[in-house]
Image 1: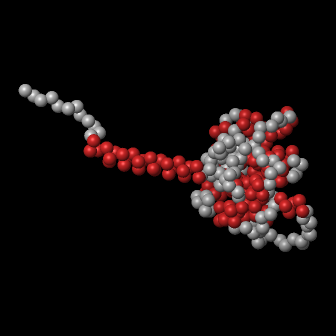
Image 2 (image 1 turned 180 degrees about the horizontal axis):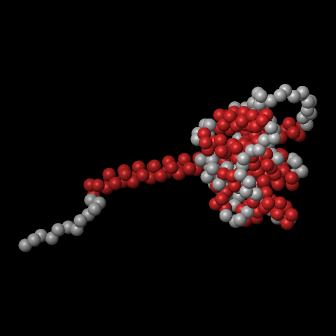
Image 3 (image 1 turned 135 degrees about the horizontal axis):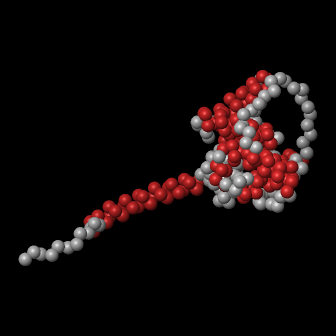
Length: 263
């Protein structure tokens, strides 16, 4: 008479220790990946606050955003073009560690230059803001939901765009929104950059974020060796302006990063 056989056990007892160790390794790898992802979050989570806009302002912002002009610099003379190329070369070298692909890096810098000039903003300041907001990472999302290089809150696509928040990961779109929004805040604050930067970050009136951006700005400033010498003009620093910005000029990138407070 044939003896009954035990049902097939795919996980016999002698395999349990091996399976347990394998699962532990997989869990450890997943935990390490999660930890790395959390560490990759931007130092400052951009969190612009949604505020009511009068129709004229809304229309002006919509027009500024919808202009599809490609970011191609136009120069009035050869000297201006050569100055731009010197800036591009020097700034590209500074950015190489964070953005190794030279083609992508040049396209990014050309777009930053174009959009900041278009909005009437200082290019080095905009680069400092991007460093603080996203660390030059294109697809980063903050805990508040802000997206991309300049950490744009999705509600802006509904207020002055076409409602498609996914477009905020497109380089030119993100930089266009960021510069237009910062220009808007600067106009609201009547030219006070300190207050405009605070409003951009949702921390209006507090010094931490503006100081971080302005400290990072110093690393991205470009002293053009080919520019004609200009006569020095004396300037007067007020106690208020000195208190707002305490970082020394001529910082290295590492010093600028250290000046950026963590959240």
